[in-house]
Image (cartoon, rainbow, N blue to C red; front, side, top):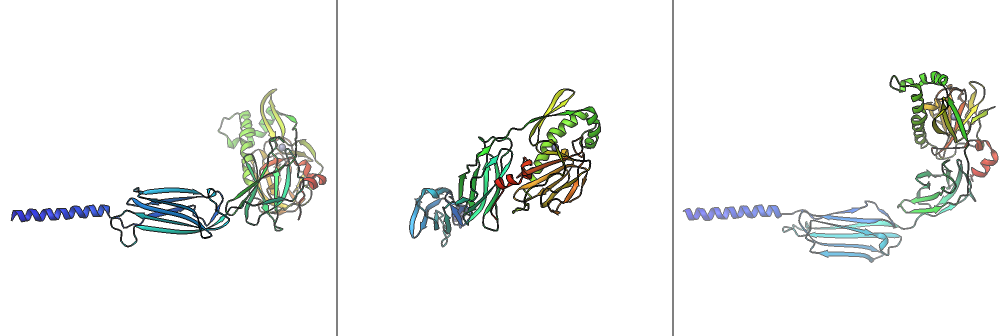
Length: 430
Ligand SMILES: [Zn+2]
């Protein structure tokens, strides 16, 4: 009896052990195949990344790329005996042509209990391969530029172009497709960049991601910016700093406040203007010359290097990125050109400020207003009354601080009043 019981329990435990082993080895999942990128349109630089994983070790893999019924790429491997397998195929290494291609991947695992085709996966993907970068053709002949100013570019680009822009060092300036099928782009040359450092390149990117890069040979004229001196007095600080006192912890000295406003706040305000530059119309809203403050005197020029003195000591140095235009007190400020108001409010050192967008990244700024007579969203005509000159912000004397800004880069406004300059630098075909 004992013997029977012994045999019986041995059989039971053997079956149990086998069941545990089977459960452990059992794999009813076929290999998982993932293919990146998950797109239908491929370009000349695409690398197909194939990743195969399985619960049990992989047995065999076959990968093929076929174009026009020809196998252009082929890979096969047996006895892999690993749970995962990765492969990258850089398309440019193979003789592929523009057009349709298909990718076939099959993978088989070593599972002991394949049910039907469960240990086997096959993927067939179809793609469109575009290996042609867009071509661009510049329309405007012999564009020129002046350091600290801008020029307009007009060009055509292949139909499947998705975006076009010009890069200068780390900055990118976007082009806008117009109804006539041509692109327009206003290109600034930052006042800090000498003609030698100014090397613009035109990029055109198509839907597949192919990019063409064209060196733009635009002759550039150097500009020197004059120095200027600003004398900060106790009288000025006592009069002005109470306007800003809420921004600082109690007990902050007026001179310290002034230096923070003149440095840190000035830089912050530039960042705000850079962000605002993205709120722009995709076609020109301006027409003809820009209008200055009537009957003005210029008290501060564009990109003056200003040295700030307090009690005969130099305390700061900053660039003045606009024009200070002086007329009578509370003089009417006209919109320099037609556009849309995108900012009307307090802007740090510039006080009550209005920014008008004229399209294609071109904007004008009016600072230190005593009164703002327009609001965000208003469409304004050239010459429309938008506010009154004043002393709001970091200034002592009644004037308007006027700027022309292209894609967030301040440029010299004086030339924009001049018909001949505009004809040479800003004319385009309609
Ligand atoms: Zn100013």
